[in-house]
Image (tube, rainbow, N blue to C red; front, side):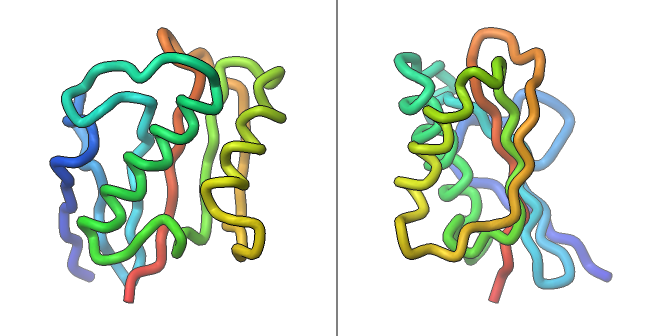
Length: 126
């Protein structure tokens, strides 16, 4: 099986030893993104603002890999506090649209430092 690294200049630069995404076996595995712009600056504001920025980052990487977040089959959402769930879910649903086939999703609380949301995804390609 071949694997290909995927990167996007429209998403925040990597901050560690990982790839923004890896394409393999007809899937694109997107590393967790957080609410930072493409220059690495935190996009503050509400949890909804952070979710929108994070999903936009994931979509930019998915597009660089020949797909889009609309083709996600699985999403993992990490929240600093599960009290943010309703706000996250509303922004998430708005991003995908009312008629979308939503991806399978897991949401867990995580010790995020300095921001409230991180999201990763697996996207179908082709």
